Image (cartoon, rainbow over all chains, first blue to last red; front, side):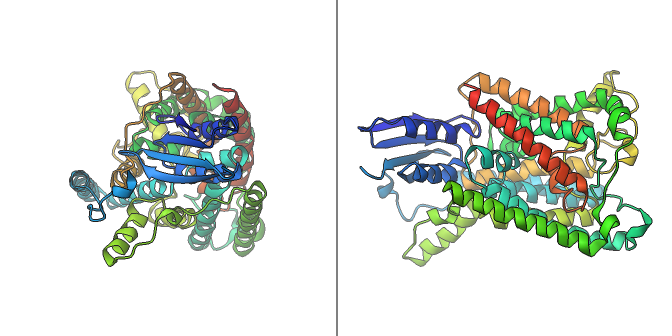
Length: 76
Length: 410
C-alpha cells in the first residue's frame, strides 16, 4: 500500500516537517509514502530524515521543478 | 517512467537556454551601465550576482542553519556558514591589519562591522531569530528564494521592508535607551590582531566540531547532493554529469560556505562587507520621506558602521542597491539554469499571514539591532567584533522560540 503526500507550494520547513509527521503516522500495513514536492532543499533533508525513521528514499523528477520522493519502509 | 528517459536528451532544454541568454544580456547591460557611472557599482553588481548564485546553488539559508539544528537535528547549513566565516576571518584580518596596524590607539577599521553592543542587540536579535523561523527564511534567504519564484518570500520581503521602515520611527528612543552608551568591542584592541584571529578561528572550529557531534548524535549526517548522481558509462554521460553537478544539483555546502566567505572578503576589499538591511531600509525611508512622513533625523546613524538604518539622502543608484538586486538576479539565473525556478504559491492562506508577520518582526529586529544574519553576524564575526557572537547567541534563542511557535501553527 502506498500513501501520497502533496507538499507542493509549502514554505520552508513544512515539506520536511509534514513528511516526518506522515511517516510516523503510517499504519503498519502501509509501507510506502510518496511525497510530491517543489522545494529543492527537501531533496537533501527528507532522505536523511526518512532514513532515521527506517525508510529508504528514491528521488525522481516529476515535472518542471517538481520531484517525487518514494520513501519505502526498510523492513517491508 | 524515469527508466525510459532518453540518454541523448539535451542537458539544458533550448527554451531554458534562450531565457538564460536573454537574462545574461540584461545582466551584462546593467553592468556596463552602472560600471560606467561608478566602478564600485559595477563591481558590487557582480558581487551581488555571485552571492545570489552561490546561495541558490548551495541552498545555504541562514534561517535554516539555526532552526534545523533545533528542529531537524542537522547542521548542514550551520557548518557551511562556520567555514565561510573562517575564510572571511582570515581575509578581513589581513585587510584590517593594514587599515589599523596599531591596535592600542583605540581606532576601529572604518568599514568593519564592529557594532555597539547593548539591549538593542539582544532584543533585535531575539526578534529577528523568531521572525525568520516564522517567515521560513531570513533576509538573504528571502531574497534568493524570491529569485526561485517563492511567492511567500516576496510577501516576507514586503514585511521586512515594512519592519525596517517602522524601526526608524523608534530608533531615537532605542538610541537614547541603549545604543548611545553601548560599547563597540573590537577583539584586536583587547588582544592584538594575531590573538584575535586565532581565538575566532578556535571558536569557529570548536563550533564546527560541536555541530558535527550534534548531527552524529541525532543520526542526521546528510549526504552531499552530488551523491545522488548515478555513474555514467559514456564520455558524453560523464560530461553531462559534470555539468549537472555544477548547474543542476546543489553544491556541497562547505565549498559554498567558503565561496561566500571569499566573496565577502572581495566585497570588503572593494568597499565594505556584505549586508542588506541598511540598503533595504533606505527604500522604505526614501518612500516615506517623499510622502512627507519621514522619521526625521536619526540620532547617531552617521557614526555607526555596517547596516545601520539609512534615511536615504544620497543618490538613489548606489553600490548597495546593486548588491541587493544583483543577489536577486544571480539567484534567478541559477534557479532557471538548474530547472528549479517555479512560481510557488502556498495553498494555505495562513502562510501569507505568517510570512508577512515574520518579515515585519525580522525587519524591525534588524533595524534596531543594526543588521541581519549577514551584516550583524556573517560580516561581524570576521570583523572580529564581539557583537557578532552576542547577536548569534540571542538569534539562536529567538530561533528556539520561533521553532516552538512553528510547531504550534497549523
